[in-house]
Image (spheres, helix red, strand yellow):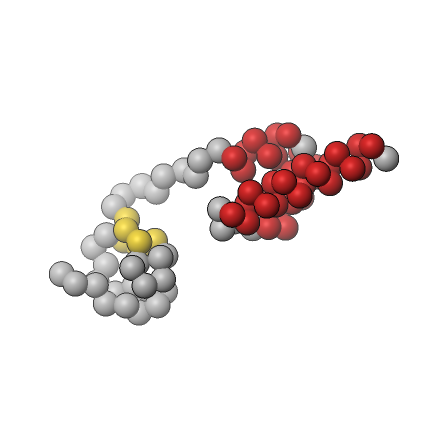
Length: 80
């Protein structure tokens, strides 16, 4: 019973951290639940940087290529 409560706590903490980072809530809850502190450690690590040149769209904040003239997510046109 104690192991189940500990697993639920690790799952909940991993899910909260994942949600704050904009990641999959359920997937990281399951990782924290089954992997315990290892799942929590993985979600706390910084995200891997993207290769190449990327920028954020000022309207929707999605990552787009630096050379893009139009955001592929919201259609905002960028200044040249």
